[in-house]
Image (cartoon, rainbow, N blue to C red):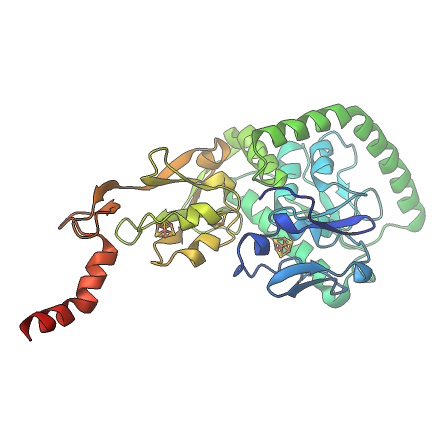
Length: 360
Ligand code: SF4
Ligand code: SF4
Ligand code: SF4
């Protein structure tokens, strides 16, 4: 996911085409942002995502949904807000206070805020019903789904605290007072934490530019609070974390999955004879599953928070490379006659023809 200058902009809103999964792999069909956009400003043209600048109303409702943070808005940074949230006195998230549309947050932000602060955030949903952005409840549904996933995660790890929603508007005068108080508090937080945020952002970029910052924030929050979790290893699938496995018998060690993995969650071993996987970097885009010609790579059930928090790397496969006796090319040896898959298939498909020709 290299950053590039290939950015489409509509005043404050920006779409970095180089970071979009659809750009990493032609057949990727991610449409998380498209499904949220109330104006149809994000659309697919020849299988690539395009921003139709004049249609974009810069509501920021889509930006939290993008797994690779390809969408940003200049007026609000959900990562910086998440870092500063712990210090905030007022623990509500409200578009009427100091955030953009709550659609700008992802599950990762919500969990990070909840884990790092004493109180989980309260999401102000009281304005969604009448909000012009919320056409067909698309944005509201996305926000509520993220809150549900975040709460489900926290319940699973045994973390006390639930992200609640505010469904009714406070009285107008109360709201003004709340707004004033929150605005002042936010100004202080931004002033106090700007150095910390700048340092953190710099460090994050130095550590790894392939993984979205929200994943790193969540990983660090998990590491910080792990001692309080009742369980860290789970058997079931998760919408947040993805565990890949590779079948030793089916993989040909072609390296396609490694080459196309947008976050470098898959990398080759130093001797190029195996594949390593980093669970903390996988965004579950499914590119590896789709590109693998032999269906060797799949997503397994379960996830392990210790592996994720400490960036542990797992070896998925490793082969002894030997010379094929037919074509003299190196191939991953799995036992039996030293003959590569291609020559073995060729023999199977055309062996009869050669026998026939010899006997004629
Ligand atoms: S959500 Fe992100 S990766 Fe997916 S299509 Fe939109 S910009 Fe691309
Ligand atoms: S898992 Fe599939 S794509 Fe990856 S190296 Fe093996 S055969 Fe190639
Ligand atoms: S390992 Fe596969 S699913 Fe995970 S980020 Fe890489 S290509 Fe996507």
